[in-house]
Length: 354
Image (cartoon, rainbow, N blue to C red; front, side, top):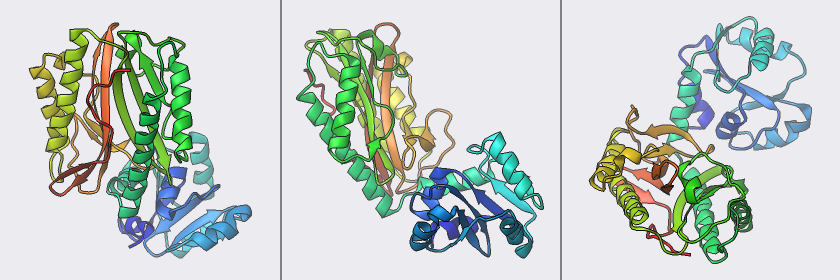
């Protein structure tokens, strides 16, 4: 069953329709980038409305839905009347107020439902990947691994965080990424204590931890990894924190499988950090979904209500942050299976000294 039909099956009744407006949702449902356009989906019919410029390309690629050039609002009203649509569900989290008002005026025969129902339905479908989607994620992760390995051979003391970030971005593109999955984050020294910081002109030097947090996008799908490397020799406290994080992520990964709750792996990782005496410094949840976006449900942490499903791709990460001193962040890409998980990341989690 096509993705469009899967979503149509989740529409509550015969007198309802879904309005798909975001680029990421259109990419997911159609299987290709649409350009300027939107889609109306009812239980009986689904139509992608595009500009005349995009019509020929999208019509050739379409499968399981119709494609029409939107010449006037009358086409939309005809759709509503034909299927007696009384309620239209919208992507309220991705629709600006201005755009919402435009659609509301064009589709004034129906009531616009701005609850999260449509968003939840879409994210539920997206959380379980097809084999084709997982292959794209795996390729993106291979690119990350290659870029990381290349960087280790070229990074040197005296280089700035921004220089290293630029170099890593270049390697991602050079190894075949469509683009970086998100802005590359490179942090060193005391800056590693703030995982949300941006790369600066600070130069790396002996005794530093260097955090590399980056991702690649391939075929529209993202992968992500994080590594912390040592510049020269490090003191015992940094070494203890690093070992704690590597053990915690390994223990958490062992618990992942379909059917467990979203709190389980995070609780196991926290227990390991506690055993090493650094749990009070933990500053990230254990994992989050990844796919067309670098961060999407499910989110695994102490407040999670998710139940894991097979073929869910996860960006797994454990980090500790000691304010104004240093931080450690390690992350892998994992795919949940019926009886465990597959770690797509090849790079070792053993501490690397540069």
